[in-house]
Length: 220
Ligand code: DX5
Ligand code: ZN
Image (cartoon, rainbow, N blue to C red; front, side, top):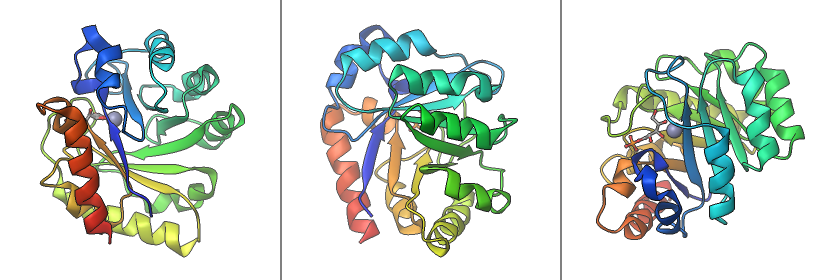
């Protein structure tokens, strides 16, 4: 399993987004948190900003949609050129159709689970996705403490993926930093979102390297 690091621009300076993404040019992904103030109690950005970011960086963009009615909006992010689009199971009414539309538009399809959402009911959907996102905080804000209570679910998710012999990436998002990333990697995660751990660091590029090294060590 290759370790991938996805800095979240939620903790970046929104007035200098092009510079902020350039500062992490060695990252595997730029993670973009789209929030609508309905699915989560916070409002960030939408398609026009994602379109501008796509022009500003060669790093693939990973859109995490924390919005109601992702069935309506998600395909548009894929059509705009986001390389990965993730929808929440708690918000989607027709997840299989929407995931297929994301893939048909040429993006990787991701499915996200809130901390309190079990993975087992979605085991059969693993064949429809390229990435499972297990949230390790309640979605909505950067800088929250990592929820250790989610670690057993990460292990169970990895076992389900392995048991079905699928090539599904397992992403963690929320409270991932140099203290917690090893626990996530040991539990089976291979894609690591980090917002404050990267953008609150003096040297964001070095923070990405350090996170990658720790995760690689822990995943053996
Ligand atoms: C939270 C977002 C995260 C956020 C993580 O709802 O989905 O991507 O940026 O921030 P940190 O890494 O600071 O917990
Ligand atoms: Zn996110």
